[in-house]
Image 1 (cartoon, rainbow, N blue to C red):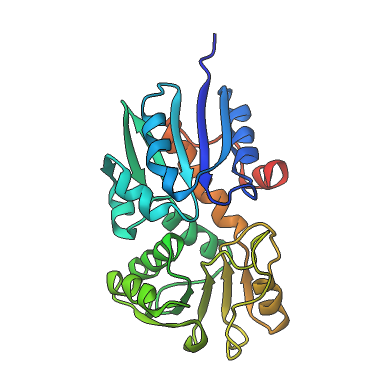
Image 2 (image 1 turned 45 degrees about the vertical axis):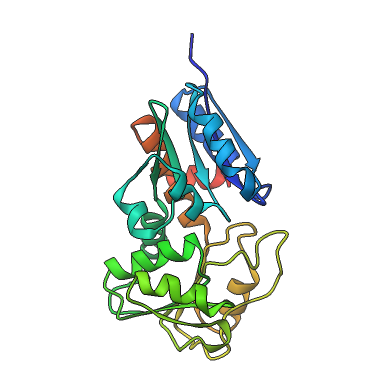
Length: 267
């Protein structure tokens, strides 16, 4: 008899997530009995939710999305180097009633940009947003040798806090300097969120515009960028890469499905 395992994606909101469909696809291909739910968790309920899951042997872990990535790191029992470097966790893995914080977003950022021929080495990178996803982008830019990293947010203080951790500059969204790579690391453009582009008006044609939002795949940010002659990188590639890495972390092997099948079957 196959033992049923349980996992989840947690966020607030989280109804837009396609992780349940994608992980169901992975599990079927691997012959694993997995129940994977999208669970909307209020910030004030996060600690209690994780405490409950610690005590459930069938629980393998959870993906973590906005706004819980930084708090999940603080609540974990152990923190892996990638998550510590980012100051944020996008995945928690249960190991003998302990929750281990990891971060597969950094590898996902690198994979998505590489797939679209966008190099971080020597690039001027402008990150729009100052949450956990922005930290993953900043870490990817730093470890790949970006020449300049700028973190921009509505709240300059939040931008400064992220920038200080990555030897980056900080500014407000209205003051983003000209860059080679622009990354939307905010929820703006996501289903249910404000539908507008945060791409600066002086973004030069030929630069790259990468949106971490993947629902919808063609966001206002990417539509705007394409219309102005920028190269566009959708969030789908990052979503798939970090999900495959999460599956491998939980079950010890990569999902036996190629990226094209993932894209057609689950996204």
